[in-house]
Image: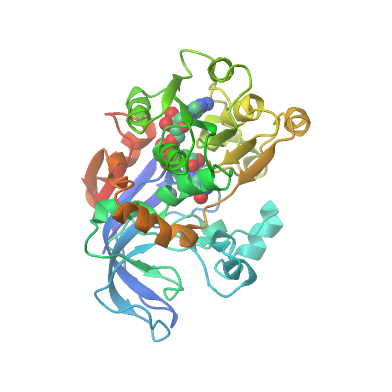
Length: 388
Ligand code: NAD
Ligand code: ZN
């Protein structure tokens, strides 16, 4: 089959690789009909995440048709149309049983090694380095799905692929960032980053009842999409986000600050990892530090909700300000499984059509160009969908 493989910083290639096979009774094989490039894939593309190997298959946002099921999977049949959550979860451990799917204890064979090296044992994620289990990803014609009796979610014919594809990650991710911040009605919410995750955070905050959403970015097309979604916008290249937020909130600051940028903007997120592994990859971007800004801008007693991905030892956070302002922090990988049913219901009732975020569709063969365009934010690119 064809698959998109990682070769190094800025180097991804479409190659012929062996078809995946069932390895365990609880596996299924899915023929991929749609897969997307995520901001998280850019961390791999930029070589910010260690433990990638040349030839690793990328991709964690994908859906498709079940073409083979293992003997231990009795809830799926060949021909089922499914979306697959990006975190791999066993369904039986303490964390899965407590609805904390992205913290599964059993889905990452390299968890102990990761813990020894980096101080935490992450769950398995498709196409996301050996630190996260070394699973082949879904930017391919076929993919092996472990714990297929738990993750894949059947979707009805009444909704199109484009409408449900983002249930795999970015819709639940934006929604979780808003929900765990306790948005329940009347809040003023600031969102740093108008990439795909920020776009869903904006719309989710409004769906949950926020009175105002103020979105921050510098890319005109992304700010425009945020406006379409109901946000007021700040271009951080034109004004200081923090000053603008202070002014827009009568000096008090937003009730909830959602960080949907991640480590690239800080250029230092992975520094702790790379201090040990690859000194030369330490970079400074010269851009404002979104997480620091979120902490400083947030009103006293407010919530800072971090959807952006961080790695290593991010330091120099204004901890004194956070402490003395009595802030609450929420963060983490998304518990996608938790949100599949309720967010499908939102799509079916017409509260949101997630396909609004798609700006580009490409064949799998053109994925390398898609990565470059998405990373560089050229051609109005907000979200790229690949059709193998
Ligand atoms: P993206 O890279 O397309 O979007 C990031 C946006 O932030 C860009 O539009 C960029 O212009 C903007 N930005 C950069 N610096 C900024 C600053 N200082 N202030 C305001 N905006 C700034 O990526 P995305 O797909 O939207 O993902 C965003 C983050 O969410 C990434 O770190 C990604 O890894 C993470 N993510 C987390 C989860 C999770 O489970 N928590 C899931 C998916 C993605
Ligand atoms: Zn993703």
